[in-house]
Image 1 (cartoon, rainbow, N blue to C red):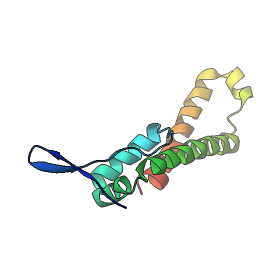
Image 2 (tube, one colour):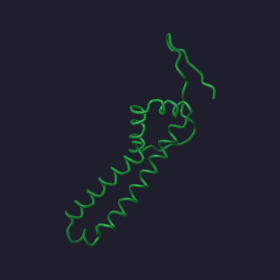
Image 3 (cartoon, rainbow, N blue to C red):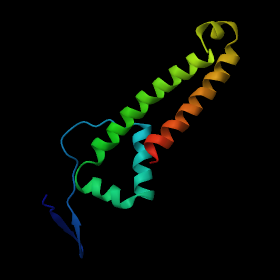
Image 4 (cartoon, rainbow, N blue to C red):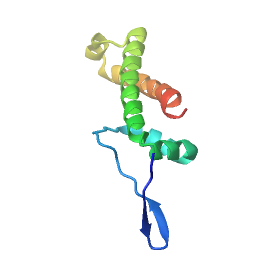
Length: 115
């Protein structure tokens, strides 16, 4: 890979650009980017310079969203949080679903984003 540099004042700065492609980076992709930038700067720089950062962030975001949906469905089924409960007691259903969503998000963040 050949890097080109642009002179800016007294410094040479790498001439970086985004590769062709449309990458959707949501919440989990942004969290992963911040984690890599702050906690793993060598990996962040390597991914950025090899033009693999945005495909990586897009993939992480898609995997996290799919995993959240799966975990929420499985936990709700296992704990008996159904539409019948929602019709009978909406506040209880909301309380349980918020609890499930928070637990699922903690699992996803620890396993996929902050690793």
